[in-house]
Amino acid sequence: MNTENLNLIQLTPEWREELLDLARDFQAEGDTRFNGLLKGGDEAFFVFLQNLADEASEDDLPPGVIPQTTFWLVRDETTLLGFGRLRHRMGDHLLEKGGQVSIEIRPSERGKGYEEALLGLILAQAARMGLSEVRLTCAEEDAETAARIEAAGGEYIETRPLRRSSKQIRVYRIGSGRQD
Image (cartoon, rainbow, N blue to C red):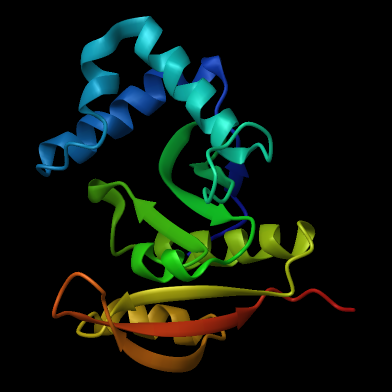
């Protein structure tokens, strides 16, 4: 895959129609996470943008909430392919929610190598933010995600149970490439 035409962006109002297209793609697969955005019109879009900005800020977050920055993967400066979230630091409760990095590719573009590209770009952002390593998790039975994490340099740490479930998760550590 040619990754030269892939970039990470922060959403701005100019991306509204492309975001709605991505949201419809998720909705067509039964994923409801963007339904409010699809039903809410302009106001919902601007609230969505403000929520992204608020999540990334160290200020005014509720106690115990770790800031996270959402980066959007763009192809050819025109098409939103997915997004990744980078939490600014680690907390034990984040092991239950995917660790410090989570990635999502729109359903119609999955399996084309964008997952690996997005993970690599997010890890580069982690290095720019000064993080020397990040923690990631996946379900124990999710061999595809485990392989992706390992291919990106993930070092297996442990398998542990989720607190409120009988499921197990695999925990990994990845150096972000920062040189001290």
